[in-house]
Structure formats: C-alpha cells, structure tokens
Length: 284
Image (cartoon, rainbow, N blue to C red; front, side, top):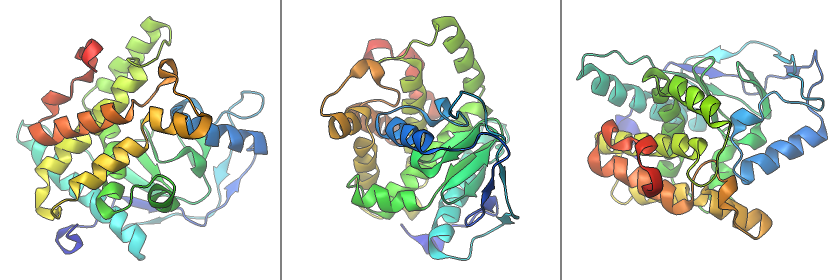
C-alpha cells in the first residue's frame, strides 16, 4: 500500500500497556480458554464479551490514561492510516447521497480491554462494539494473521480494519438495530445461512466496496492479500484446523468461499447496495 498517500486518522485511542483493574469477577484461565476457542471456532466475540465464570458481567475498568491521536510507532501509524482512508472514502460516499458519515474510534490495546460490550481478551480477535461505536484491535493479531493464518501483507491487515469499520456502517445505516429485531424473532437460530453469517458477510462486502473506492493507495496484486485473509478466517477453515471437521450449522462468520465471494462482490460493484446479504437466501 502507498502509505505516503494515506492520511493518518486522529480518531485513535491508544490503550496499549494499560492494565485492567478488576473490581468484579474478572478473567480466569477458563474464560481465556473460552475466548480462544470461541474465536477459532467462529463464535462471535460479542457473544463472549464480558461473560465470566458465573455468567455475570465483569466490572473491570482500565487503569491509566489512554493517549489519543496519531500513534508514534510504525504499526500504530499503519492502523491509523488505514482508518483515515476509511474515513475519507466513506465520508465522500455518504456525502454523495446527502448524508454525513460519523467515523468510529479505533482503540489499540494489548492483552485485555474494556468496552461498552464488556471485557475481553485479545484472544477473541479484533471486534467492533456498537455500544460505544469503537473498533478494538490488538496489533499482535497482525503477526498472527501472517504466521498462523498464512495471510501476510499490508492489505490483508487493512482488510481486517475495513471489515470492522463495515460493522460501524451497519450501525449508521440502521442495519444493526434491524438485526437485533430479526434475532429476537428467530429465537437465536444460526447455521450456515444464519443471521450472524449474514452480518459478517455484509461487513466483508462493505470492506470490498471500500477497497474499490480507494484503489489509489492499493498496489497491484494486493487485493489478493485480502481474499487470502478472508479465506483464512472462514468458519470452515478454522473448524477444520482446530477440530478436524466442519459443522456448517455452527457457522457465525461464513465459509472461506463465502467470505471471499462477498468481499469480491463489493469490490467489483463498488456499491453498498450490492451487499444485501439478508435477501440472498440460499444464494448466500
């Protein structure tokens, strides 16, 4: 990616190195294991955040003061530049239809973090919390993406951030609220074509739209990095790796093929209207 052409966002809250004070039940080893298993087996972090031993929400609080603004280190700067590009692209996209884009804040953390969705370990992976409109990222995940998931490259990392920003778009567009209504009426049923899968694939598609709109900073061949990253975190890929078998009825993010296809669909169309995963039905 042409980093020199990318504007670094100021909407960054750096909590790296901050401790998490425990005034409630807190994390135990079992909780961390649950989060790790949940992430790799495709369980949405939102279903695990803040849930501790007896099922009660922890009242953990961050210790110290976060630093806001552009990070001074290379990895933080990269993340801020990708976030800045999403702000510029989606700002123009929304303005074209007479709307105003309100960007999310990116929280950089290490180890554990407290959000409006609860407390979680970095093992749960990057996530977006609609309650505070912030996306949370432990930058060590990028190393894991390259070494453990076989998805190296700058644009693979950019895809991760763009996907989480996609969840922010869902909140701005009223999709998140509608999804909660759908979940309530469906009784929480999921599976290969479940609501969580539709939500995640739409975020992949939105990431593709962003990539299409921002090709000025993408080097030739880099889109393939995003496709590889999407495949590497497909539910079937992770399940096959962790448990040796695939159980489609437990999917929450979509298969490798689905995640690649919906990212590609957004990239090819360049329009968020092409990302209606909720009307796709059996063609999801």
